[in-house]
Length: 199
Image 1 (cartoon, helix red, strand yellow):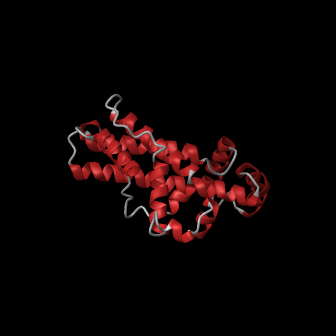
Image 2 (spheres, rainbow, N blue to C red):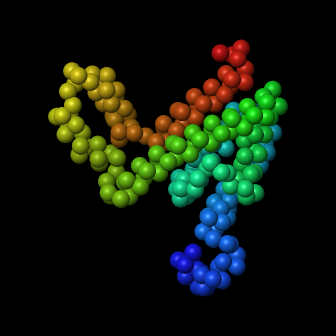
Image 3 (cartoon, rainbow, N blue to C red):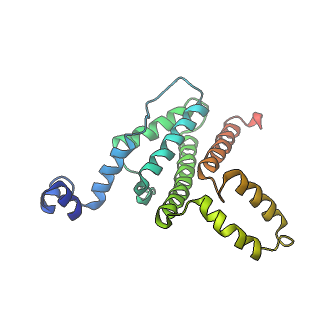
């Protein structure tokens, strides 16, 4: 609060006239950030496309504002922009024969996945920023050492798959590709839940 007040050129005490404390300030900041997501209720495309688009926007938002990942999601923010996202996600699966609880659980599943993968991607970006070494540079530097200490006869599948993945990604991991792959599997799973006959 003191630092923010200093940046605004006001006293910390005058800042408390707008927000009672740090927690409330973070809530306001987070809700404002969530305003970057285009969460209008779009009746046009299929539910899969709407949920996918919202999940991708949410993931991008969390990567551009990684501090949002440090705000506990167990008690949802109550601001209008966060509520608009929740409403748009629910609207995407409304009218598909689901109960209200099933709809909420689907949205929670999707949001938990988005937050988890965004946390991993943000940690990878932070590691690169902290060390000044890209994932590709790390792989090039430590790959030979790994080859010396890992016995291919003992871990044949890990060596084969790890080598193929490293060659494909140019790194040990591709967070964006992993996110897209997992998101599609979740959307497919939600589809199977909605329409068991399609399994």
